Amino acid sequence: MTNRNGSKNQTYINLTLTRPGDVVISYADGLIKAIGLVAAPCRERSKPHEFGSAGDSWSDTGWEVLIDWEVLAKPIRPKDHLELIAPLLPSKNSPLQATGNGNQGCYLASISDELGNLLLSLANGVNPFFADDIE
Image 1: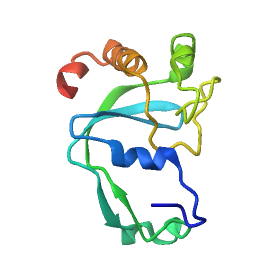
Image 2 (image 1 turned 90 degrees about the vertical axis):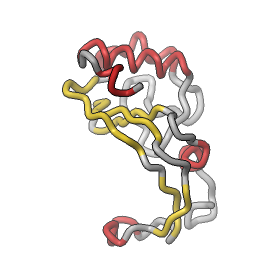
Image 3 (image 1 turned 120 degrees about the vertical axis):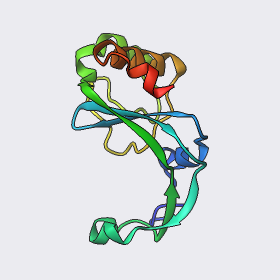
Image 4 (image 1 turned 135 degrees about the vertical axis):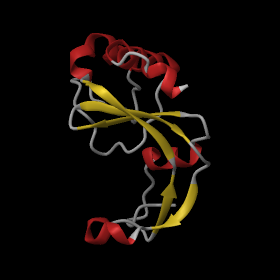
């Protein structure tokens, strides 16, 4: 599947690489607000009507990944932990810039186990019992 202009985006292709049980970390507005587990294999779907004109530049079909989310009571601000996070960011298709700002073109990044474990540890540090809910 390609963008309307015919190009491919690895961070969209990553949706097809997910498997049930994979951990997904949600980052928006400068914060990690939720962490979830992939609940079912990725599947091709028609664009939801609810997207309205917001999805006009997208293809009529795309991929859907169902995720069971655990919303963090206390979100994590990656910029507060940049000295730990930055060295572990992927060199290509990174979800964050070295400054801690999000990469707007990144939809679903693949990160190392080391970075994933660090982020889970940070979340668990300020959200007691969080790890029990996500495993």
